[in-house]
Image (cartoon, rainbow over all chains, first blue to last red; front, side, top):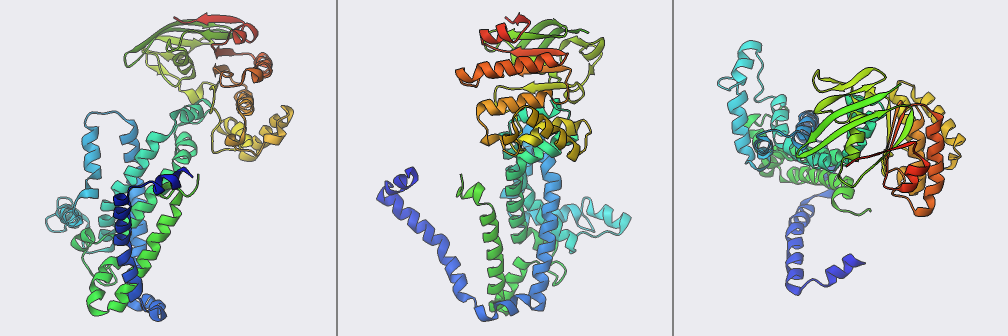
Length: 267
Length: 209
């Protein structure tokens, strides 16, 4: 009730701005939907190259999300709970990929993991013959690089909001550090962790700049869906629209699954 | 059987200087807000450690600032009850009560069995599968108290266990608390502002200032 009242009281110029903003977001979506040939949608998406791009995207983005959780959870924990000198600098660096142009991230990754002259990459290649660039692993590295900060941000916020008394209680009830973390901290953190996983995954799935710079655009090997969409727009626009539609549906799915967190439809 | 604590804790600019010795008895801890009553409980629980001094329980050193000996909370055999929100919000009443048992190494099914027995022997069967958010203040404190005593702790720490309850809900729970505490031997501490708690629950009062 109060919400409805607040909206009805919005001054006319605010209302107009809000409506225009809404239209601004919606027009491209409607445009995209109009371009799709629904009868051939399934065949376009399931044809060889597009299917390859989709499955590569799925595998790499999920792997990148796993990597983000693996590194992001401890990072968020330290940033939220450990007081140390330079913590704000560490946070700024961890969050940097979120605001950095992705292509710059890709260039930086090349400089670090490139096989001929990269900081670490040359060593990896010379010692183990391991090449990260232009490989599916390279795609995962690029995607995780840009997705990680989103996970850290969500989880750090969640950790700060947890009432630490529950964890203290768990200790008094005999839980050691590991059990306390798994049975209490992680459980209390679940909504934030799920939200973090969802945004990190969506970010990894949509990654373009860092991926094409670091991992290249090799069909069936490093060409993820966004790269495929961009190239198909020239050669086969119908397929590009179909693939875009699939990405759109996935992202709407992410939003819907997070409605508690963002849209506040419950509670 | 004695507990003796003597030393100081410094947390930021706050310093608590303390000297406590206890036997098998119920001690009421009183004193103005901010004097360090909860800090004292956290010290006994093993959540924080002494800055100087030592804590000895039954002749064993639990905390010693000079030798760096510190037995953490999960190895002390303590049980705590806060004034509210003592129950883990994501576990049912039964699983909350089973939690300390599971931590002590009991299997999931056995701990649930023991918890259910305790629930029914306290006349709380109706609550067994409810979540903490569905309980009234009095009900959750009752469950928290049952949980605190489930694994016969050596040290019981109650931080204003009745103060969040209505005036008329207190006498009954006070009686329940007194009964539970006299059932087991150990070091029992109750932080309270209420004269009636001091008079009716405790054997002795320690006034912090």
